[in-house]
Length: 274
Length: 262
Image 1 (cartoon, each protein chain N blue to C red):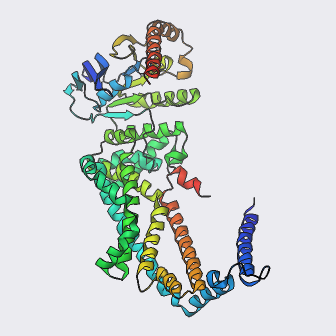
Image 2: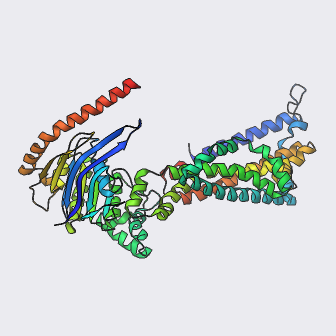
């Protein structure tokens, strides 16, 4: 079975302010099968998003290979749809135009693009909000538009960078269910980054744990034994859910503490230097 | 405060100010007129001068000339500002090379250019347009430059991931962002276009509001100077209302601009 995304020993380094190299991710190997939903969990600042940007082609790894459907990736990944953590909608376009743009730039006639966009807005529950500009929508509604914007192009791979991070707890769960519902109809390969372990287990087929940065590595990989279709609200009450959560948390906790210690240390040394 | 009370109070300020002016310009206080008519004229004379201008129709020619000069200055200055702003923002090396000269040109008080423009372009409208252009250009240029540079990284990445090529990024991302910055400075740049026109006229011309004021001043016709000033302010307010209307239509998508002006 061809892998949708395959990172092999990917190392990513940035040049930071004083010309030192900062290794964000070290020798990470990760494969996502076609139709598989993989969640990456790790402490804050561990380079989860970096890994996602590598899969998207927005970042080039310093070493290692990236293969998309067995083809080495050069430049941007045209098979991937990317749902960003921050607001990424075009603020000067209405919800409808924001969704339609993906088809329009691919050369679809405008009328056709708008019709499809309206369909997608309805699918994410915003059929009546087509004429609104992003600033007139709530955070959750903007994420829905973002989801429709990405999905209308029918990408084979869905990359999601803490997409529901800024939302409140209830809205996150609703969005999670919406995502699962849309994903069930045509299973795309999903790479879903989050810092929320519960969210990861509830959504994914596999949960991958990253260590604290710098030089973050992949340190664990669990298969989620929960049956589909799932309901995010109910799956959290499942016995298997709790067992897996305990097991993963035992590993993750140390990394979270390490990551926390490093971030506070970095702050205090900065304060001393300043 | 209700709208009616507010309007009433605003009117009251004007009435009181005009009444005081009229009073001190005509009635001696302790045997002395505090605002000698030669220097301060009085509201009645100023008002009748304005009425006379409009009744005889002389004023229209001057208003039209000033309006035309302002519009040309605004259009040419904006076009240049947009083009150069875009070019510099997309070509950081060009921007770096020209940076000191841009700063130098912008630091120069534009009034000193008026004699040169008069020399080069004569006493007609084009020397005034040129003065306005030098004012408008820099405002639009800096805003467009900023607008293109400040496009959020996420929005740009999103555009690229949605499959936009460089040209489509330009049209769907950079251009709207730059335009929004330009429109947010619309009031300032339109205002400066008028300033350029009027100052240019004042310094040497054969028509326009600035010319009218300068002529009145030349013969110590203080009522004429004040009348010109009042017509000019009314003119600028009308233009400003027009700009606000245009802005409302163009920037519906922006929260600040939509809510701000009510």
